Image 1 (tube, rainbow, N blue to C red):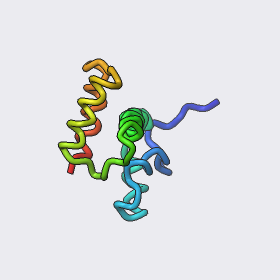
Image 2 (tube, rainbow, N blue to C red):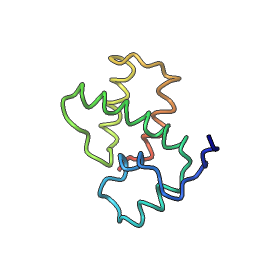
Image 3 (cartoon, rainbow, N blue to C red):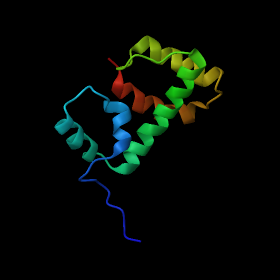
Image 4 (cartoon, one colour):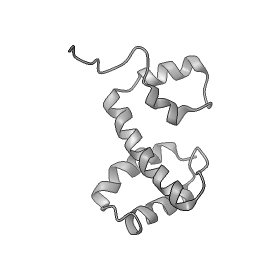
Length: 100
């Protein structure tokens, strides 16, 4: 089994969760390929947590996220989901990149 490339020339399909229809197809490929797979994995971990919150709330958060919605997410994560601040910190760091 060969070594996996750190950066993909084809892009990473995981990026589609973030990009959706917000940018042109050519720009998607460039953005997808601009981050290492491990970075996309960390972004996806944050999105998994948000999706659990959306399931709890019974509706999807509007993207890009706004500050009040993310504050509500943080409150849920610390109280209902019982995440430790040390667990939540990297997730928050990733999510705040997507605040409107």
